[in-house]
Length: 116
Image: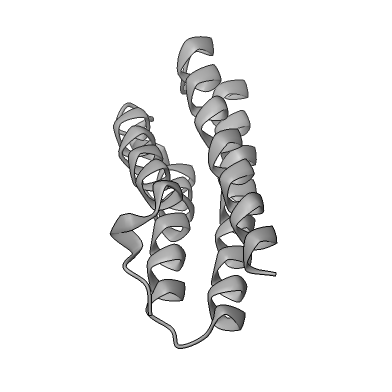
């Protein structure tokens, strides 16, 4: 069992979650149960699955949860693009979020390789 709080990738994913929550707070009210809720669930899933994987008993299980986190990161990547193209966030917010997502994905990928 590992302490997820010791992982840089978890800290980056947590920071990304906070950034997405802040950005999505400005989405139209009509999106409260749509894109806003969906992107928030997906982004929180990244750090959540890292934490859950760390609480499991083997590296095989940790790897599985890191892969789930990677899928959630890809989901956020698309939802961020959709948010931008719908005009819910401006270019700077989009670019900043996209850079953070890319960094988290690279870190997840490296950690998955390291476990193998």
